[in-house]
Length: 65
Image (cartoon, rainbow, N blue to C red; front, top):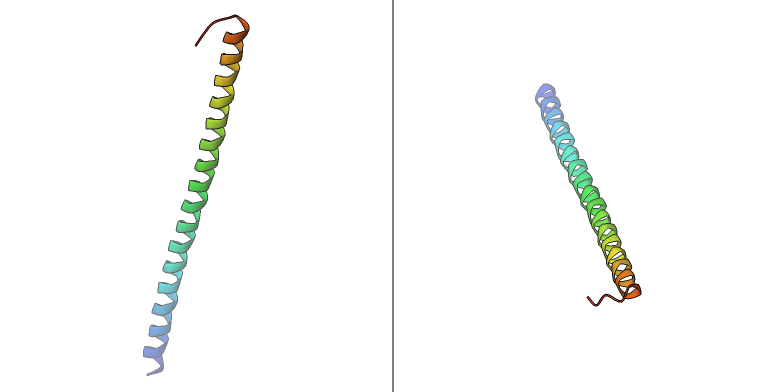
């Protein structure tokens, strides 16, 4: 009886461990997605700054664009 109980507890412990690994993997995926979003926003801002600089340079030289 006690061995059966111990086996059940061990199986529960393993299932909890597997679930926690899944939670950690999901957390890592969310963190990676947030970092990718930040990098994308930074690239967008850099692109906008470059476009403004180019328009300013073209304006300085009298080029219409």
